[in-house]
Image 1 (cartoon, helix red, strand yellow):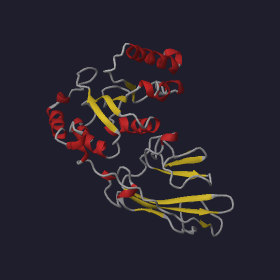
Image 2 (cartoon, rainbow, N blue to C red):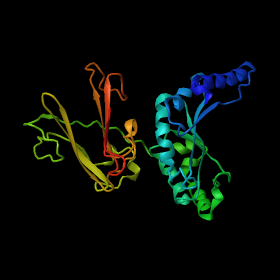
Image 3 (tube, one colour):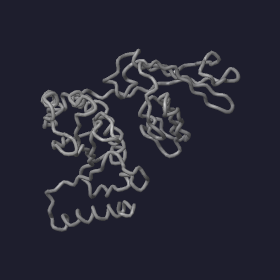
Image 4 (cartoon, one colour):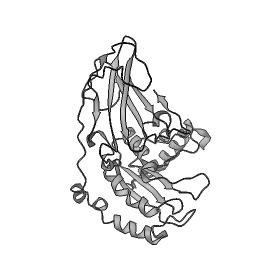
Length: 312
């Protein structure tokens, strides 16, 4: 663990790159690659802290595996669960670096490997468009990671390889990717509360004003899998009084209470996220958070072991 000091790792990585630079071996691309989950999950072991710097990295790489139920500590995880959070964070931290999934594969035990494979193109076209390259780990080792681990797995792989997203030509690929949804700014009106507000899950005493109504695919970043109003829709209302800003939402969800996440990760599940900008001089055209903004997540939890949580 390098004495729990990521700077030691950075120094070693830079040392190797510097040797190549000194020897003028310039026909090399450097991939800085981390494991998708940190073991142990402690501050010193945060992969972002071990980044060697933009001058030393050509590609950001991520490794991850769907172990299924091959281990006593593992469970079945989709391609999206393995990589989506890490890809998003990497793009935020290093927006100019291309991203590869440098090693990935799925076991057979614990789920449907063929179905797991067939989901990948959809993810790459929608919620994980920042991935530029993926590399399958085709080895029988701790588990049978090979594409041909079963006839169904092999057939699924051969099927998805026909998808245009796997063209080697970026010019050819461009015409096949869906056009990203345009962000449409919505406005809600927060009215002053008509009296004492009782927090009881009922909105009879609310002066609802003008809500934000979520009723079409433009609201859903993962919209390729949205199945209409019955799947996920709702309205969010705001009120205020002398002391508080109030938020309430009425949500229709075919599969409610799906959130196993905690703290800053509560957005990745059933939750409402609010960002408050408190700087009156901030531009209304900005598209990212700034110092002085407050990001608050309200998670539903899962109705079982993971309770509802508010993260600020």
